[in-house]
Length: 226
Ligand SMILES: C[S@@+](CC[C@H](N)C(=O)[O-])C[C@H]1O[C@@H](n2cnc3c(N)ncnc32)[C@H](O)[C@@H]1O
Image 1 (cartoon, rainbow, N blue to C red):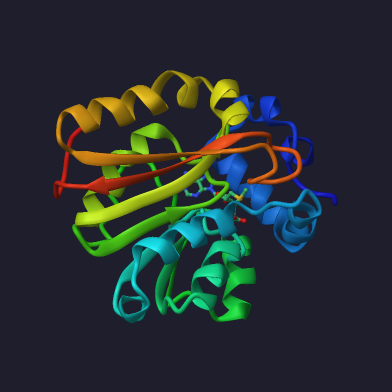
Image 2: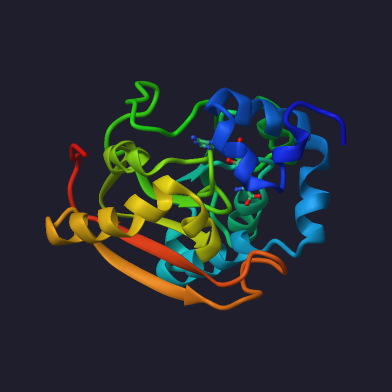
């Protein structure tokens, strides 16, 4: 349990004072214990996203489409998608030790050790992916709203960005509370994407996270500036 920023693992207010690199350090030091701790709280956001992907992607297409798992961590969501027949899945995460755990499972084709933020990542081509997925990756100090600009760039028109977020995480984070819904609605009005949002009841994401929402944003453009 020892490591850098240990107190911030489940006390999200502490993360407000951490930099993105601090957050990556926290997850690096957490990598070997992460899954046991999160499975102890019944984390199942990866299952919610996996179930949705199984609904929107026919079985015969699952070995063809390209998927990027943002904030992939140790690979809970990638593993879920693999079990559903998806084969071309890449992982992006700034914590190399989390990715190292996923490597042992042989889930992902490519491990991209990077932050998803507003900056362009020249290692990823524009319109490369059919789908971006993210589970448990929107919370204080994790993927910021401004990262939608880059996610839109790397998803091809007609592709989707699908993720879950607990309501209490939205309310607790200045970035998510002030920007997430307004930005999703604004970009829908501008024709950048079509929005599917699914309300999730208490218990659907974990024993402790409370109710939340799954957004699936069908991207209609190649790029946009936020
Ligand atoms: C709570 S874990 C979720 C891991 C996995 N998706 C799951 O469902 O178990 C959050 C992950 O997001 C990563 N992360 C933090 N900031 C990020 C960013 N800006 N872009 C991408 N991933 C980020 C962390 O390193 C960590 O591995």
